[in-house]
Image (cartoon, rainbow, N blue to C red; front, side, top):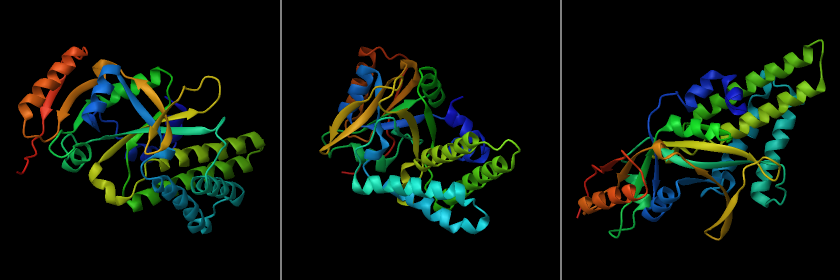
Length: 305
C-alpha cells in the first residue's frame, strides 16, 4: 500500500467513491497510429496534469478548495491550519494563471485517461477521422495494471472521475473535517510538537491536491472517465525520469510506463464500414507483437450513410 493509499484510507468513504475495488476492465481510447506505438513499445504515456487539454480543469479544483475554506470557516476550521492551506492553493492557482519557473523538488502529477465504457460513440468520434479511419481502445485488467505499477516503484492513485458538484463538495468537506480533527487533537496532546503539526498540514495539502485531480466539469460526464495518476517528485534522486513531447506548441512532460503484455485483455474497434478487414488487421498486428489470447471486438454502434 502506498503513502497515498494510506491517506485515503483515513476516510474510507472517499476511497470507495473513487474506486469500489471491483476489477472491471478499463479502456484507453486512442488513434490507430498511437495504438500501434503503444502495443509495439509495450508502454503507455502519463502526461503532466498541468498540461491537460483544459487547464481550467485544475484551476477549477483549486478555486473550489479556497472557496470552501471560506464557506466552512464557521464550522470551527482551525485558522492556524486552514489559512496555510488557502495560501498554498491560491499560490498554485496563481502559478497556473501567471506562469511558473520553479520545478525542482516539487511534486508533479502525471495522468492518463481510461473509460469504464468499451463502446462509447462520443469517445469514438474523438479518435476517428471522418471516413478515413476509425478509433480503437485497449482494454486493460485494472487490478493487474495498478498492482504491477506499484511493484515497479511507481506511486499510482486511481479512481473514477467525479462530475457531480455536490459530491465534490462533500468529499472536500469530509477531508476538511478529518484533518481539522487531527490538527486540533495534536494541539491538545501533552507532547505537542511542531513536527507533528507540519506533518498534518502536508498530509492535508497532499490529499487535497490528489483528490482534486479527479474532479471534472459535469458536462463531461458522458466520458465515464477512470484515471490513473502517478505522483513524482521532479529533479531529486530516485524520482522517475521524464520525457518531453511537443503538443499543440507546448512542451509537455510525461512519464512512460512499460506494462506487462498480459495486462492487455482486449482491443475494441470503433464503428467502421469495413469492420471485417479492420478486425483481421488488428488480430495480425497483435500476433506480430506477441500479444496472446487478446480478444478483438467490433463496435455494435451502427453507422449511418
